[in-house]
Length: 340
Image 1: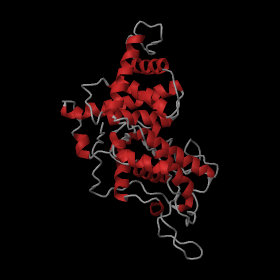
Image 2 (image 1 turned 180 degrees about the horizontal axis):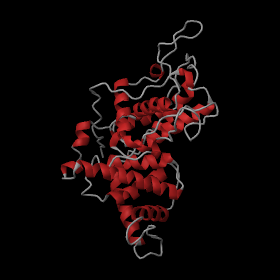
Image 3 (image 1 turned 45 degrees about the vertical axis):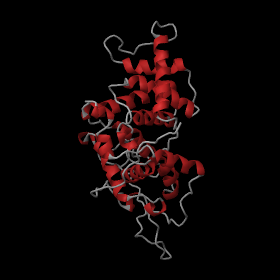
């Protein structure tokens, strides 16, 4: 059987948007001289990025998704995407799964609904199948009964009948119906995805950039954590089926460095011997216009009324978590209120 990949993303872009620039070097020291080449991608990395690009869609394709063509309103679709991402993250916490597994499950779900309609397939049923499949692919194996329990527990939490969530275990009268439903959806999921289960991750690109451009270990940790929080929150949108993970990583890295007051080499500075310091985007080539657009898209997901001033981290890395100078604190994107 010949497999046909979905159309790839049209890389045209318009408009130049600016994310908050990194602040002055006074609060974190001058940027280190950067002369070494960026880490070369492995064969596995190259394959993952190539396979991932087959699942990128244009803004027009996303605006005319199968669900939209089936009569689902844009705001309803956006809320469903965010709700499913939240459910998968909460279910993953119950199952003690790493965030990489959760991200894979969310991306499977988003890819599925770029091919199928929300009206044709119940989003919560597909979410359970995506999480079960992601556990297998990432080798973070969980029993089917555990996945069923976690998904239904989170899905029904806060309802009138089950304020703490419904406990569906093997002894529950609906368990075998839920089990059969999930297994059927898993087969449908594999068919729709053409068994293409390879997923690239922005997390690893962020870590590579952090290690290259930020020498202080405590600042590496802070910048990486804030960047990963941005990535986690961006999974509540269709951003990861519109932009490649390398571009998303570059956007959250620049945003995180700015919030943490860590200056990045911009290609204009020189070291003591007069050599030009290579800009961060020269070692990790990306389309800066698209990176700025992604940064703006990410910041648009937060309620601006909840934003708080940034306090510069001190030598111990404090400041982002509370305390430190600068006239206020900022606890990272996960502590902001989302637009709905």
